[in-house]
Length: 252
Image: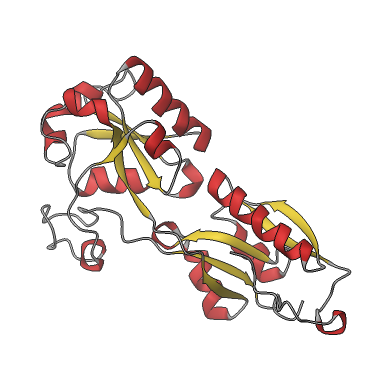
């Protein structure tokens, strides 16, 4: 999970051991844990490590400038255009997969299936939207989306599938967990954008809505999928979680 370090390396060829290797800390627990595991491995190998708080979508310029050396949990299904641009420029490089079996989607605690018969089929949401309604979304249902700076996957799904839901961004990962906890304790309706692996999947018995497969054509061709007038009428694209670094990180 860490940047590869040769165990037999001599101090003379370990690079800038007097300078800290700066690792990005993003806004969710899994990335925090992964980064600290990598940091401890690097410390054990003889490096100094500094953790730098960085926004998921805005970290790539800092990587390109060398202000951050590496970020260790990028989700391919929800990455900014800025990342691809920096890769093309050669200022940011990919440094391997994280090795997780990842999935993102529209989800709900298992008890919600009793409130919206027909789940997990996505078509059930057409007839159940009023069950999920809140004051700020009437007459449509409420979907709790990712925090705003993670992108708008919930909005994209609801618009693409023409579902009568309004996506409301969560303030943070903690906000998403609070929604799951409250729904489970009160047995109240909840539709949410979420991901696995995540401890909350088992803690709150979270289930994914079954959406049309997230194929590349879905995101580019309106004729693909159940809604002939829109793109994104499908599930999230399959997720690859990988690491990236400043182009000079290997020498450092």
